Length: 193
Image 1 (cartoon, rainbow, N blue to C red):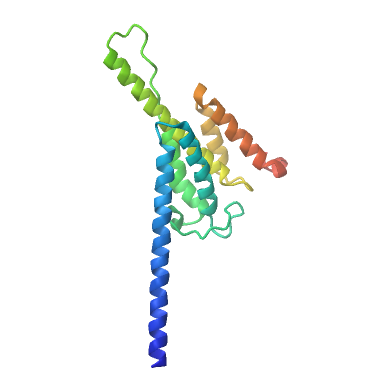
Image 2: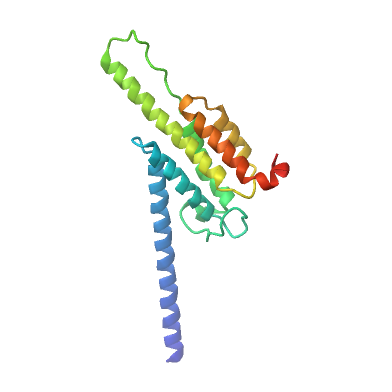
């Protein structure tokens, strides 16, 4: 009977561990979804920036134990369960954020346009696409900032992509990304250059 009790106890422990793991993955998926929704917020730039900062922290904790910049997370979760932190970034997040960053914004109609509906529709389109571009830029910034102690091979390409985006409203974002990148790499800047 002791072996039966031991087997039953072991089975119950395994079931509890499985349930806890599923709950953690569900929580991570919900958190990830909320952060990405916050990144696409159309009404508040502050919400977007706070979501980007939280996304950076989330990415930092998604690393596997061998990643110096990862914060030693468990590697469990939604996209993070697919492989190493770098693989997840390259396969999941970077293409998603690059697609958002590549969104083209139309130019405003000239002042000679008389149809107010067309002008309003064009302004809504510009505003929505600008939000998408900003979400892409903030997402890529979160990816770059998730590696404070090393420079993965995909980071220089991200910096170039962000630098190519031209726009007055995004000038501050670009300079913030570049300055925070350089500050975080200051100790080993000679090596990272």
